[in-house]
Length: 127
Image 1 (spheres, helix red, strand yellow):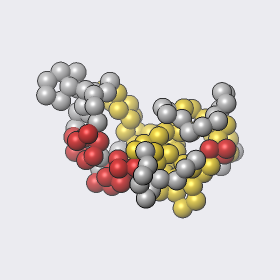
Image 2 (cartoon, rainbow, N blue to C red):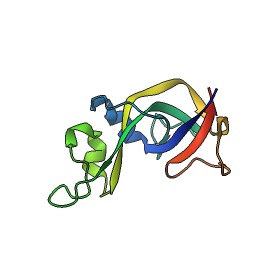
Image 3 (spheres, one colour):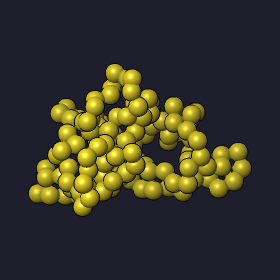
C-alpha cells in the first residue's frame, strides 16, 4: 500500500540527544536522514530513523526565548543549546532507529529526488 511520508534531514548530534525528550502527539510517518557527518550514526544516502509527526508548533515570538521552541524540556538538548532562531518546529513522536535503513531510491516524489533533501519533502513509500 502506497502512503505519503515525509523525508527529513536531522543532524546526528540532535538525533542522539533526542532520546531524553518525551513522546509527543501522533501523526504522519516521517523518515529521517541522520545528517552532518562525521558521526557514528551517519549513513550516506540512507534514511535510518523514523517517527510520527505530532504537530507543528510556532516559535516564541519575543523575549529571551524568541525564535525557540516554547518548552525547552521537549527539545533535544543539543538543539536547544546550539540551534539558531526558527519560526516553526516539528514535533516528532515515537522516534526510533530503523533495523533496516531505507535507501533514497525507495521513495517517490512528484519532483525528482536525486539527492538527500536539505529540507522536508513530501514523498511516497510502498510499505
